[in-house]
Length: 102
Image (tube, rainbow, N blue to C red; front, side, top):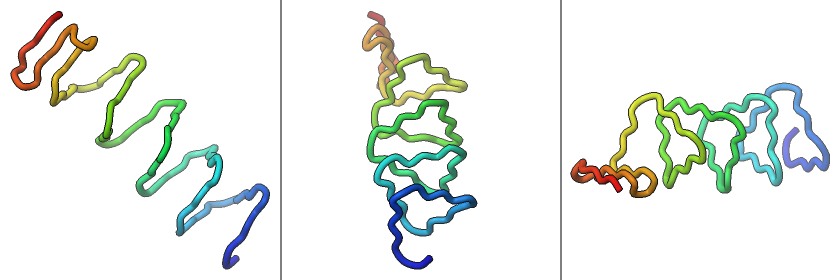
């Protein structure tokens, strides 16, 4: 097919689908199998992941990481700023390495 098409119902594709241009979805975009992306994924709103997330490379967060349960680190933890436990119960000052215990 060449040109523009409007579907007012379900489109089922039985094989692989390649989309060389932008894909815009106006409501929910559901994937029941594995989704593979070869480039960057940009998400403008809140993203909810309901299972484990495996990241194979370095990850940069541009803001605060809040963890509501236990956090486990399999290797070292590097902190470039002050390190605080329970806000100010135990502090390691980044500039000097001095500790303060409340």
